[in-house]
Image (cartoon, rainbow, N blue to C red; front, top):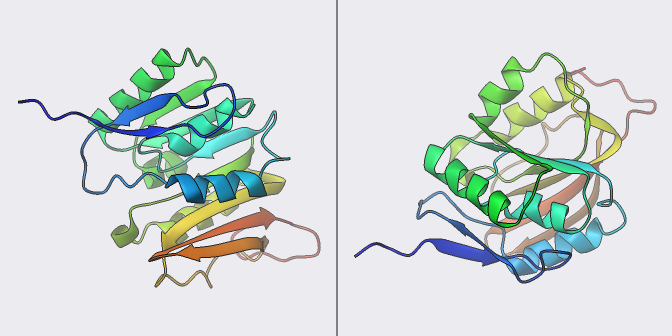
Length: 197
């Protein structure tokens, strides 16, 4: 008997109540509905016409939610091939033409980029136990991949210290639920000397 794929619903926008599916993977942990509601309340005036990066895409729920709410584009980075194929199928089923899936690890994709127009919103929800977050944040800043005034969403376990984040990232919101902490930062370069740039 074939196991039915997991699924999550889009909360709001033109894809409201549509379901996206993803394979059964132990590290796939889509951002829950309540957290997504809070996050997109924080970003409600920033999403329209934004360029979004979903760096640890997984189900793609964050990037697709952004497209549903009027983002100009979303770039999805996914290292697991089967998960990426599910994501491509979801975008096709939603008739999305402004969502772009790249099959690569987050670090590899960031390291090999030579130039890219900066993103307005970056979603960072890495596997909790792989210690990838800080290195990715440093690369994002070093390569100027986030626009001035751009937003960075971080979701992690409660034990991870964020003291090593780039100095130009200013905390705007934070919340905890269970063993998950989530934060929204804004990139502000004015008057700051940043060691990663």
